[in-house]
Image (cartoon, rainbow, N blue to C red):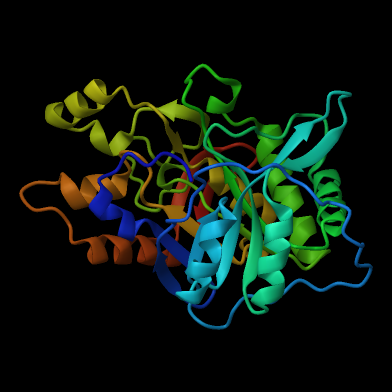
Length: 324
């Protein structure tokens, strides 16, 4: 998921997972190594179906595209698989459709073999498409439910992973308010009407509980091509950013989705601490005279989400307190 330029030894501290009952660290080490075409979508339709419940044990989550690695991961303790990716696009004729190149036959087989594992459809990804305008969140959710039914109901829910693009001038290097509204409305429909698990995995800059008014990181923005604020405070850090050419941060954009959909809509929020040049990476490697211990940095973020933090200049709401 997303950009992963951070140092390899920090990958084991890749995400902060926040749920209603627990705070857990997990690593996303099962990303796509190749793509397989989608096939066998004519599985018999299940007219009566209930999504699997979220595992009651500590959540151990993996993101996967290559199904060949997943069974071993599950045998090692993974109990949630987020399959990347499923996309919301328009067909050649201009109609909204849900698509994927995942091997759905393999997913179905794994689902049948491991009855207690939760399977989530991750939507988006770095360089992935954003939903085109003109279709409501409710309609997109209906399309997803139909798509899932045609596949034999292999997904128990969705995970929002819409992100930016390598090309800073790309249309998807910026969110639109329409996209954020679709995410919020789709989420509410999926959770409260269809009973699906609904989650999000924003890069840290997209939902930054450690934001301050010193560097404008509390200010909402639709842009996904911003310089990483935590790295702009010293000449030495700025030189690192300038030499890397990195300008792919966001600023509190996912906070709008949380506010509009309501925190009760989401089963967990997984913060990508491994985002390229994240605030977490800066605090644990760059702050002088002594960097923060990783565990302390994670605790501070969990505590800030629990206590709540402010986001300013948010459309329709102005100032909002985000609390998980």
